[in-house]
Length: 305
Image 1 (tube, one colour):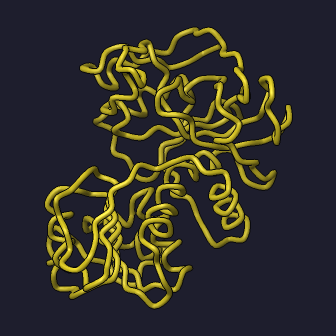
Image 2 (image 1 turned 45 degrees about the horizontal axis):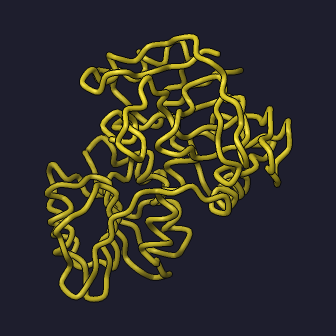
């Protein structure tokens, strides 16, 4: 099969290569999926799990990419709940070969059925951003109707999902980011927008929940605008920033079949839109990931038409 591999962490995307690679075989409780569309997270090549296994042993050459959609082509021993020919989408384990390949082996529990009226491109774009936003807003943020919520990076692929989910939950949404993201954030459902380069974050007053995808100084400043009992949720790693009489939670997104199913239903109902940007082929994927490429929306690699 064709696959993109990485072998040297120091090279970044410049070290990506399109090669012929052995097709995977399914182990117990696994399936093989013919990948139709795949996502790639921009900082994935900085994750230790891209380069080593759980025992810190090198696993290169590694196939990156973890979010994808496709069709089941084979079942491992003991696999239940899925069938050959079924459309699926899901999130692959961080420590295994990923989805920038024509086929992927994945635990069946990490997949959800992809309805026939959702395009494979939309399905792949829904996985990582959708699960991250869902878990940040609902599981960790415990959002409630009537609350005020700041979503940092509201025009981005994760932030735009968080804006939509939080608004549907009945919250008042204040998006933040650069000036050129204002209209995008408002289009996705933010009630207000703060240009972090030219407007002061602290001017919004106190809020109940902050969902942070930016990190650094923004995380620290966000802790100071959370009212008593509120929550700062971040995906940027452990932080010492703590709201007074509140809490800070950092988390890593996890595969969840039930949540993927909920997200897909919202797409079908028109309640949720993905933020898809560039769509490229596997042959053009490396160029699409180059750091000098201006990204707007989620880059999706479409392996089959």
